Amino acid sequence: QIQLVESGGGLVQVGDSLRLSCIASGPTGDHFVGWFRQSSGTGREFVATISWGGSQRRYGDSVRGRFTISRDNSRNTVFLQMNNLKIEDTATYYCATSPNLQKDAARYYNWGQGTQVTVSS
Image 1 (cartoon, rainbow, N blue to C red):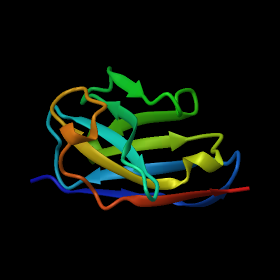
Image 2 (image 1 turned 180 degrees about the vertical axis):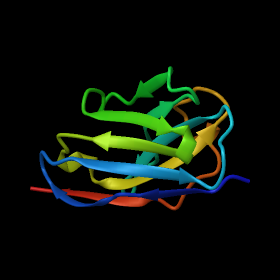
Image 3 (image 1 turned 90 degrees about the horizontal axis):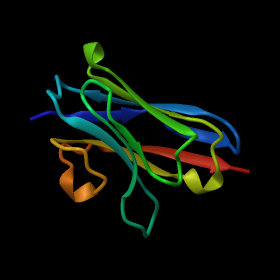
Image 4 (image 1 turned 135 degrees about the vertical axis):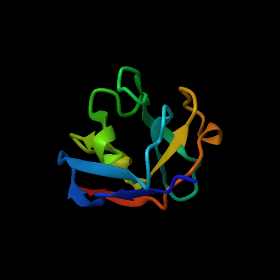
């Protein structure tokens, strides 16, 4: 079973950028890899997903135009470049895999432990 490990979170200010990484313990095959985020008291919100080859990408409405998802299959790594961060981006960010293009967290598997992103004013 594939294990995913997220990294790259931290404390930043409004308008700053961060790049998150999701490293898989092995090849994810032809699966999509998605990013979700969760704040205390809320469910997991879809952020972005990417196909194995990178040709298919989808973004959540709240991050479209500011976040970019990419992947390097040679390193079994998926990245989430986050620009122009807002206070409302504060959350724990998770990555997971799915056999299909999905925005529903229930359709994803192999969840990592998450990385905290905190945006302050």
